[in-house]
Image (cartoon, rainbow, N blue to C red):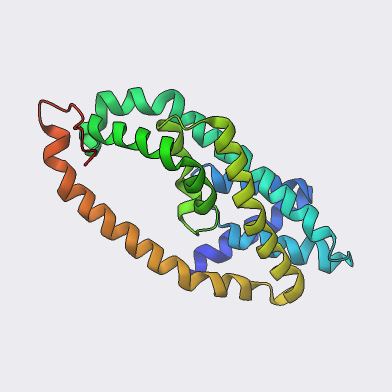
Length: 218
């Protein structure tokens, strides 16, 4: 695991050496397009390497966070449209092989219609979840304007906190990553537990001949 983080760190720093500030937009877009490039490396390292190490003032952190949130939005929209254009038809045809029934798709549609704004916002504050939430939002065809607004609003404070932490800690910016890591493990454990429950709960439903949604939404 440490070796993987070292490789990612070298990649992030290499991008900053090559292109500077635009690298923040590029890598945060990658992170939000369902590709696990941790923002907990991208933003703190940027706070140190692009601001404090170059003698810039703390006010530059706000611009850095803006670029991070912009990158999040661009990557999220890419994942959103991937889900919106190809996700639903693909899952309607082949979803049973992934244990996804038409009922599940209809339930996701209803969920994002009712709670999409809160989901898009809160997910941006959660490690792991923030990387993958855009694809199901696209599959459920959540209103793209609302999705964009709440994605940006959720991404900005998260990017700001990580960037400012890196700015304050300077060369010891990796402590920000150490602070976030304990929250990742419980989230991963919950996701694994949910996956086990999902497989057990949905196997028969996905493969039954009649997949018409129920009125209860269960």
